[in-house]
Image (cartoon, rainbow, N blue to C red; front, side, top):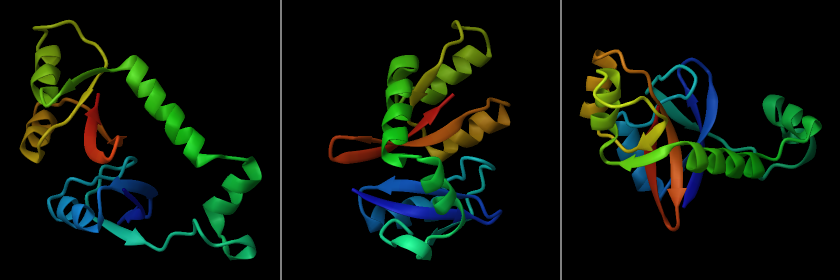
Length: 146
């Protein structure tokens, strides 16, 4: 598992978790990595400040340290929340989202995986969702949550 610091073309920074560098490259080239703030898929890796000490850290990271933000704990808490409050529909995410959108089933919080084509269909149908990188054991998958 590898974590990269990423930045979209609008300047938003976030991190992405990948099986390896090749998985990052494949997902980026396929447009599967989107900015959590603006959904841009024009993404670049940026130098990580994770291992840089003291005065070399800049901006957001210094503020986070002063505020006492523990990103590892925050990530665990987000995952716990998703696991407790969202039904995992796995590869049926798009199908379930469409059923809820058209009133076939009762609306609920769901999470799962979807293909780029399914995501395009959901957007065309006016269904809002967001992508969160999810890790399970030694493998990773990009779950899409709504």
